[in-house]
Image (cartoon, rainbow, N blue to C red):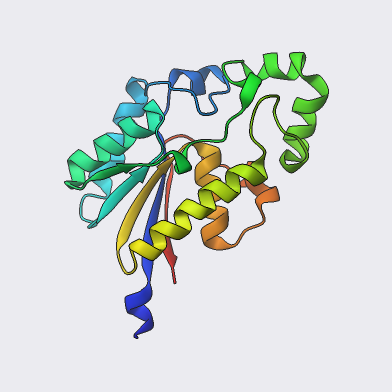
Length: 191
């Protein structure tokens, strides 16, 4: 079969900004709504990509990701499919804390996680390797089902970066270095 026909376009979108992003609070996989800037940010992104045809949007289940997906879906007139396998990395007991609070309360583990995220599991949380296995597995299934289509994936920053690592065959040790900001996007052609 023609190689061009086997290419799937994956548009990775990080959920829009929340108040927790501006406060530098660790959200993890908790439900936090987009703030006013986040809504405008995603509406602008939808308008900028309005000439692109999308077949479907897959999103994690957190409130900010679903809101982001719904704004895009309304503008692009496509369906949204929610899947927990695209949820953000579970940051356990760090979730809800300011980054400075996590650094103070979990000094050794938090600083080590910032240097080498694969070496630490946040207390009651999820390892980067476990999150990668979950997210890569879902992306692999989506790619099988959606060959030669253009799909949009909406995830939290770490989940989106792990999806990017899978799609581009990047080392997941670079997850923090490559991490997306809220409302960012990237088109990746996958063969």
